[in-house]
Amino acid sequence: MNAQGELENKVLIITGAASGIGAAAARLLASRGGSVALLDLDVARARDVAKECSAEGSGRARAFACDVSSREQAQHAIAMAAAHFGRVDVLVNCAGIFPSSPVAETTEALLQKVMAVNFYGAVHCAMAALQVFPDSGGVIVNVGSGAASRPIRGLSVYGASKAALLSFSRSLALELAPRVRVNTVSPGPTETPGAEAAAGDDPRALERKRQGISADTPMRRLACPAEVAEAIAYFASDRSNFITGQNVHVSGGRYMP
Image (tube, rainbow, N blue to C red; front, side, top):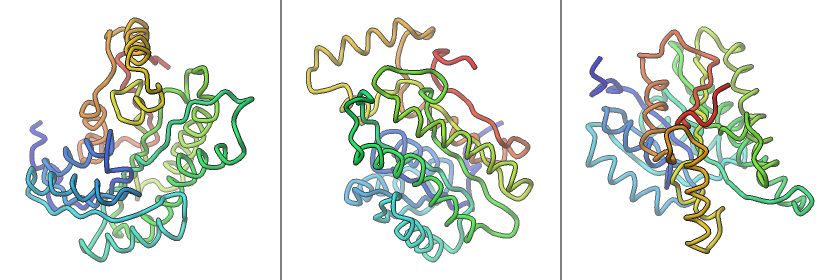
């Protein structure tokens, strides 16, 4: 089946769309005909990505400032996107932070921030999207993590936030069917600015970490954001219209539940 143009006449909201997987998803969804609303704290970078989306696709693109950890901001930004585009068909929850911190060294502030962005942020946006989805239904795609399934040293709090998101996704899929489909895409280690920042400032240490992860991955490399975006696009499209409550790992075989 040719995926080109499969998202024409659809409006898709992507959170965390200024960089990494979110930006890659916005570009791909736009290239397949969708109109995209890019939500991010860094609205200047989101505007740059929106310009790329407009150049690559046949739909429209616009950036909106949003801190998803604030329920009020999530509601406002999604309502603004719905008013601007006239409808919302798909929500992609991609906003997230990726701090590496041993539990014994994790401050209360960091604990609250990770949960507020990675988990509560997705809940806030889902609640807001349900207010603007058409009567015919909608789609929610949550971007999780392999860390929800496989423990990773230093990522206990991050993994817990993504495990909460995965549980929420499954319960929401059951609650909202058949009107709204809800699925999760769980990337493994991916070449993103966030992952590089979490690895530290030493380029040699970063390369050693990359080599170690690659050696432990059957496909012998990290994912690139565009590959994760392909799975997001599949769940956003009508090709997956009988699939809900599922979690797909894009990890090169690193996670095999």
